Amino acid sequence: MKVLEVNNLNLGFKTESGFCQALYDVSFSLMQGKMLALVGESGCGKTISAMSILRLLPKNAKITGGEIIYKNQNLLELSEKEMHKIRGAEIALIPQDPMTSLNPLYTVGNQLLEVIKIHQDLKGAEAEKKALEALEMVQIPCAKERLKSYPHEFSGGMKQRAIIAMALACKARIIIADEPTTALDVTIQAQIMKLLEDIKNQTGTSILLITHDLALVGENADDIAVMYAGRIVESAPAGEFFKNTNHPYSLALLNSIPANRGEKLETIQGQPPSIRENISGCRFHPRCKNCFAPCEKQNPPYFEVGANHKSACFLNFSNN
Image 1 (spheres, rainbow, N blue to C red):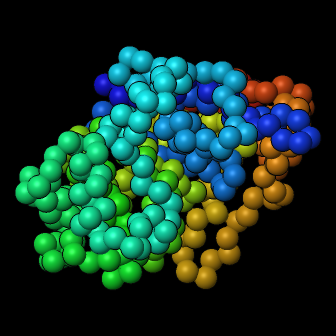
Image 2 (image 1 turned 120 degrees about the horizontal axis):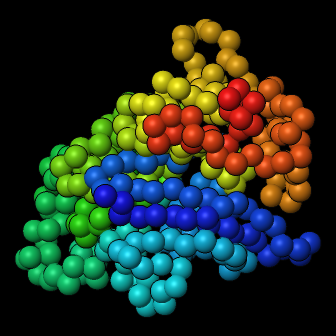
C-alpha cells in the first residue's frame, strides 16, 4: 500500500538573475513498511525533494507544479497550521548532521519529553515512560541514566540514535532520513542502517532514505530511485535494480564503488550541471559515454525495462 506519492513535482528558485529550475517532474512512491532510497550526487535535488514533502523550503523556493499525496490529501494545498500537525507527529525528519541537531543547553531527556508533549499530548510519568521506551528501542545503553545526559556527552552515533528516538516516540508513519550516516565512521554507519531496518520491520514505519552511497543501501533498501540534475533517471525494486542496472548514470555510480582494496576506481567525467545551466536534451548527455544524436536534442521519456523498472534513456528505445 502506498503511504506517500510524489507526482510530477516541479520546483525552482527565484534568484537575482531570474528563475532557476531545480526539480523536473519528480515522481516516486513510498510503500507501507518499506524503505525507498533516493540516490544521487550532492546537489542533484534529493534533499530539496524531501523538504518539499515537509514544506520546509527556503523563502526563494517555489513549487511550480505537481502534488504530494498523503492520506488522500495534497500536502501542497494544506495550511501551515495543518502541516504543523503532520511534521514530526506523522512525518519525521532525521537530519543530516546529528552533531548540530540537538540543543546543547538541554538534556536529551528534556528534548525527548518536549517532542512527546507537543505531538503525543502526554505529560508527567506517562511522557517519561514513553521517552525511556524510545531510547531503549534505539538501543542506547543505560537508557534511564542517559535521559539526564547532555548532547555533548553523547557520541555521534548516539546523537543520531537519540534523533531517531524522537521520531519513534511520536509514532511517525514516515521517517525521512537525510544522509543519516554521513558524519559517522563506517562501523557506526552499519549500526544506524541496521537500526533503521529493524524499525521498519518491527513497527511498519516507511522510510525515505536520502543518500549518495549506493553501496550503503544495497542490503537495506526495498526500492531505489536514482536522481540526476533534478530528475529521476531510473527507479526499480532494489533486487531488480542491482540485477539489471540500466541508466548510464546509475551504472557509472555503481562502477565508482570500490570492489577490492587497491583497485583503481572508475570516475564520471565532467561535473554535474548547475541549476543555472540550460541543457537541451538529456541533462546527463554532456557526461555520458554512450551519448548519441537524440540525447542532445530531446529529453528521454521513461521506458519500461523490467518489472516496475523504469529508465529515462534513449538507449532503451534504440535497443528495442
